[in-house]
Image 1 (cartoon, rainbow, N blue to C red):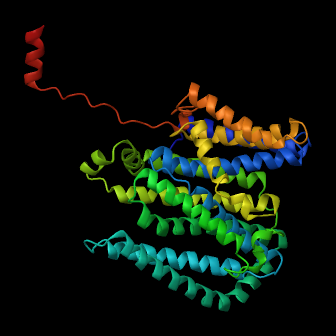
Image 2 (image 1 turned 135 degrees about the vertical axis):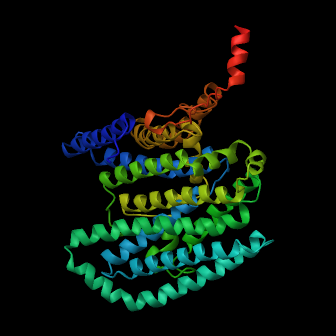
Image 3 (image 1 turned 60 degrees about the vertical axis):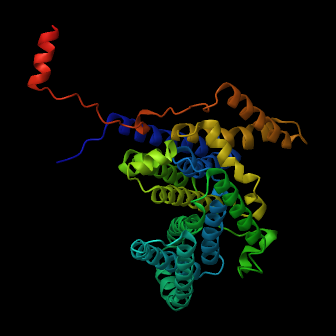
Length: 420
């Protein structure tokens, strides 16, 4: 029996394909030059990372400023893999990252089942066990990866060079997202029990730590190709408009389907009232970590795409001031609104990075950082819930279960007849 798509689904897919086709035509005919092509791709990337933060904060109610740190992890992890392939002609980065994420993921899932049976295990002790296990698995991945790399490199070299580059790029982006998700799981274990404000401060501290590590990535971490505070160059520019739109649509559909499921309703219930959700038997910690990990996965995915737009990464791109960008976007668009998040992300890119940078007088480029907060301030005064509030396009709207009517019984019928 074939399942028919709803009208809203067909409209969403049709509108997405049409928007992509129109942009491709405008770019191919040079109506949109390289500058605007880059701005549109950056807008799509910001939409992905902001959707992840909206899941954490807008839908789950956890005030997080660590999204930019996971964004940076995804960017540098994916860039290192593709750099090693394009410059060094080696798949060692790809193999080691694949083995590290796979083995760590397996051991994390195994430990979750085992540790769930231990009563009274505090989060800090669980964090220590998980961390030790992932370090051991990462070391094992490095040793095995060195032995396996020549075979994988030879297999990829059989493919045409452009095809092999695309394969390495796509796998690197996905693995970088998984890496960000696994790190967020480890980081979330000891801090998700904190209150919302303290949780925000802890995640901000995480972003600062990541930035400092990137400043010293060539000396402290041993990744010479990242060049530390000088910035990483030579990254292949593989993030096309197609890949941005593809991963954006996948991200929207993923979050939409999650929110429509029982898991999504539990995530939202934690935001509304933790005490009531716990009284109904919902595992608060479980759904907090689920939203945090999935939101960080999307941040890592967006970071991997961003790294391959300009072919250059610098730690200053991921400083704590920039970490407020996705937070501002979801507040501007509307907390708990995927539609508003996507709209605000593209508006952020087109206005802040495009229009204001081009049309402000020379020397006044930094004034765009004044105009943007002013627009946000006016929005918060006139529309406290953001431009879209909680509005969603039909494809993204929650389908509420129908209200059950009380069953008719003989007693009810006799009462109705007596009243009439």
